[in-house]
Image (cartoon, rainbow, N blue to C red; front, side, top):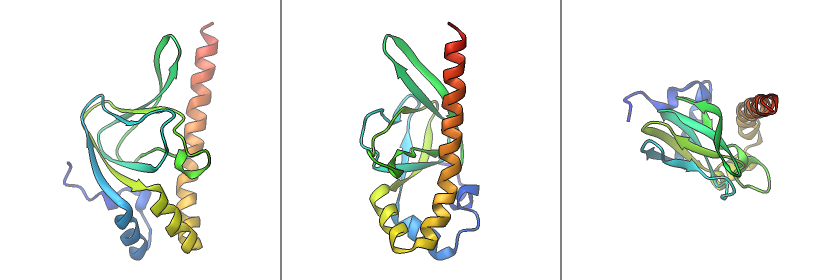
Length: 150
């Protein structure tokens, strides 16, 4: 794992020290070899992961076709956003394209913290919302590209 402090990533910038401490209590470092899956479509969305080193391909599976990569994530990006809303199931696969390290955050722990401290929850949701928008935009572009080929 890199020697860089993962808490210095832009995703965490400007958070109060006590919020960082709370987040650390929900975090577990994870390591994945190349081609390992962090997330599998349809699985329970019980966590999100901030990439601290490596790259992750977000893939959409299509019957009878190889998976389509619609976005590649790197250091500081969030893998997994489906934990934010029901039905709490992953809607795509996330695969390490090289050895990758993350901080995995337990969704129940995050939700309980955000519910207990609405200011903290609001600040964090403002950080997660652009992640969701970026995913939607990348998926839209991929769909346009797929349909343009036919």
